Length: 484
Image (cartoon, rainbow, N blue to C red):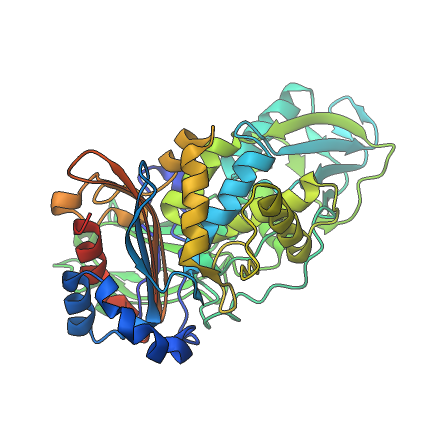
């Protein structure tokens, strides 16, 4: 069975597309296996329940790194192969988000300005409307709707020209959503975009009300015309057996098969498999129609000219809020947007992954957290080359715990048995006792965060498991946490 993505279903509609965890279809290189022989004499450093759980799961301890540390005393309760760089999967987001909170500040907001490229007179913009992308990780269709309401309040009734989208803030190669694991429809595979809308994904709903089939999307998209299944009364049975959807045409999906009113509503979270400008056009077309702005043009890429007139600006929610969304639900594309913003903020425009990694590495050095073995890649952990050691993650966790932004950092992490990617993990006696980021890929399970022990004292905990049977490691993780 493939490893399930590192995600949890959102608990509010505004987070509806945050099912963006990560997985791969092939095992990863098992870092550290060459040192297994040297590690064997130290095997007793692992608590016996952890060793027994790893053995029962068929996981080689040489493929694992663990640290469990008393934060007040600074003493390690468990320290196993902590210096070996391994794949962290989405746990790598801790490095990106900790750097972002410090470099950008918790109240940092992305600004998306809107320009008139031409005169606005008697309700008609005799030219183009321009958007300048800033890399906002959370620019949603409803935000564009509010922007459109502002424009209508300013007197805009018709756009005679096109919509120009300026994406010059980022300098990225073309993104192939199938490259990582052959799953181009998976929202976790969406790539970054300086003018990213709704995480580059849609939620498609289908239901039968009043004896008729209905299908709609969030955000609404102009031109959406699905082929609906035939309606057949009676018991639902197995919905997957009734329906055979084909999403290869995003605006005209074929929902082939049959459906019963007894089946209720079905929803799919899907990457918007269309060119970025096509997706923006479908969303803006629906938005403008809804607020009463006439527009028959197209969305084009380009630079907004210097003589354009600023009409209004959309400000995002503060970073401290968005970091919580990113870490709780392991949102890959949001993390990449933040990562690239670090390069922009440092004056390294246009931003790319190399420049962003340079900014983070240099900042870590200034904080006494130099990490020569760290490989950030795209900053989100959806990678087969990203690497970090448990030792370096533990150092970062301890620095964050002592720092002034500790409350914002810790509150962003999933809570065991309660929310985010840990909502269905580590319940029972560990419920509510652990704030930790999780990471999963095929062949990788990782966890890093803060545990409150039975004595009321806090521990830092890091676990990196790179093994073909890593998905079976959760009993061993529970044993490690209960060792505290």
